[in-house]
Amino acid sequence: MPPPEDEVVGAMPGIRPPKPLVITSDNMANAWKLWLQQFDWYAVANKLSRQPPEVQVAVFMASIGADAIRIYNTFSLTTAQSKDLQVIKDKFAAKFSPTPNESYVRYQFFKLVQREGESFEDFLTTAETDIKDCGFGTLEDSLLRDKIVFGVNNENVRQCLLEEENLTLTKAIQTCKAIEEATKQLSSMKNGDSKQVDAVKRRESAADSSAFGRECGRCGGKHERNKCPAYGQTCKSCKKKGHFFAKCRSKNRTVGTRRTNYSKKKVNEIHHDEETNVHSVEDEYETLYVNEIRKNRQQQVQSDDWTENIKLMNNINVNMKLDTGAQCNVLPLTLAKETKAKILPSRTKRLVTFSNDVIPVYGEVELQCTVRRKNTPIKFVVVNRTVRPILGKHACASLNLIKRVDLVETPPPPLTDDEIKINIFRGLGCAKNFEYDIELEENAEFKIHPPRKIPHAIKDQVKQELDRMVDLGVIEPITEPTPAVSPLVIVKRNGKLRPCIDPTDINRVVKRRHYPLKTFDEIAANVKGSKYFAKLDCERGFWQARVSNRTSKYLTVNTPWGRYCFKRVPFGLSSAPEVFQQMMQKILDGIPNVQCSVDDILIYAATIEAECCADSMKQALD
Image 1: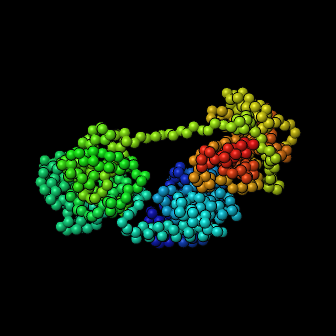
Image 2 (image 1 turned 135 degrees about the vertical axis):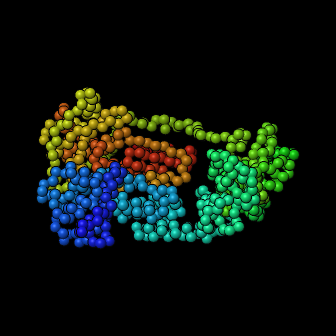
Image 3 (image 1 turned 90 degrees about the vertical axis):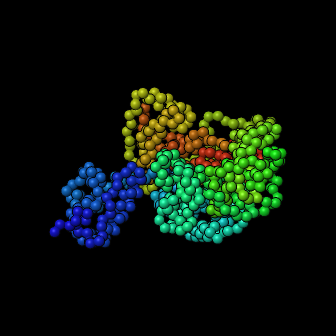
């Protein structure tokens, strides 16, 4: 009896092969590694290695799927190779997992940070996966430890890690996990009178969050018996009581008029005395989110609060807090009643804190208010609490009580005579007392590449740029034999052509110095508290570092106009960033208030009058 179609011949009962490999353009290398790992486990479980080579290949190809078979048909395999499973795996690996660019992989690792809402475990898994392809060797554990310290998004966690003496990778991981778990436990245990909120989330309706019984035919939600929120409510369609509009069975129901609109508004501060019941809960309402709830209305107002005296109806003067973080205006019920104005039902039914504490909304009222001798109508949300009146962002802006400032400029102090005399050079600079001598693996072999063809349309521009590089001392013509000759590659950047060396052969055998590059997190931690910054950029930075005569022979490039050897560090050399960072760090070492990242120099100070800022600028330029 033939085996079922969905089982591979030779498979043990109950163990199925992995699903076919899905061919996509997104991270195909990772998808291939995961699929191959599943297949290898499947092969071990079914003792596939004991089968003849033809059977092993047949099981592999039957499992991999039709998309991959199309790729297999493009392989030029001999008869012997077509029966060798390892050869076929290698072919697919070369297709799906080309050799990664080490510089780019390291760039991805260095810029990795923990995203908002991402757990530490997920962040650690991503970092451990990325660092495997970086080739850090013995530095892998220390660099992963540093990535944890500067990559976590919690400043308190980072401070704990930095305070730890002799911090190891294991200790850093344990500390982060322990703090994250403790934070979760404290959050669930905390139930005090004052709750500070750093973020808000949407509150689910009762129909989404409850799990009582089946769906109610009157309100559409799920709840306990005799606790239907539609009890006593009037339908907006048939005007009968006892059900919501969404569950109306009237033939005259208007189709398409229902809107379920959960909008989010934010109120910065509410003070309250006691709990009151929600007047009504309908299927159509808004939810306001509250950052902080406090008891005791008589609590002293902070001196830095922005307030404004506003006259309400019936000559009632009220001191209101101007809150640019609030998206609505809030008024206590007692004050609203003093105005004798009619309080209307509101689409906003509740205020919700991050911890899901609910403040019912009594209604809303529109009052004629006098603000700085100007009469204007203002709509308030009324709550049955002893709260301080709040004037929200939109009302403050419309009444010109606040003004958005996009830019604040402070005129700099006049320059001194010494500062005016600072000689800021122009053109291409050159580092003093530094020369890079390349280190290569023993018995390294190089190809002598012929010159590549250059399109006629840009040929003159390329020659002009080469001549300019000769004038700058970056390259020079050479006629004597050299141990390596690399091809020329033309890079277009900012609309200009830049002739560069293609150092692929050199990069394969160059010995890296592995000097650490500074990350954004490291620099940000050092400049904390600074308000004034100056940025210096090294013009074509790598070209400001000389190379030795021996190194210059290896950095020879072939062009249609002959060979040129580089006298400065070229772009594209894999060791160039770390060599340049090491050089800049040595030059700037000892200068206060200066941070350097490759060819960018950042000078910072807490105040504009700080002498260290000007001194650091002078020393950096010198």
